[in-house]
Length: 172
Image (cartoon, rainbow, N blue to C red):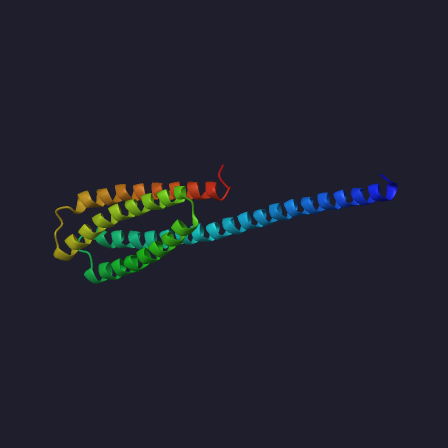
């Protein structure tokens, strides 16, 4: 083989190797950018969900405080219940985005938050009904049950937060 042909063959092999390396590097960079974009989308969904939960839970606490009075003001209770319902819908919409964007583990914890929320809401509905009718026979027991279920809800939200952090790569 003459020197010119060897040089040409060497250049071709070097070019092919460089092209292959550039292709691999480009795919790795594209994958990294996609992963970063996915984390950002998830972070935004999780943040919006947690913010919606916070606002809804503040409204829920307002309902429970209004029900503490010996004779709750029906208009105040109804106003606070309406705000709670409105914010519960916001939570539901935010949860849908989390379910869409997140992996199954996140979906499972959203389900646990929803179950705990529903459990507390059922007690609140009974308490509101009793307040409207003037029935105080279950008030003490329901207040204790609401506190217990509120604590359970808080634990499920903390679990969601931990799973979300792990998914985002921020778990420690």
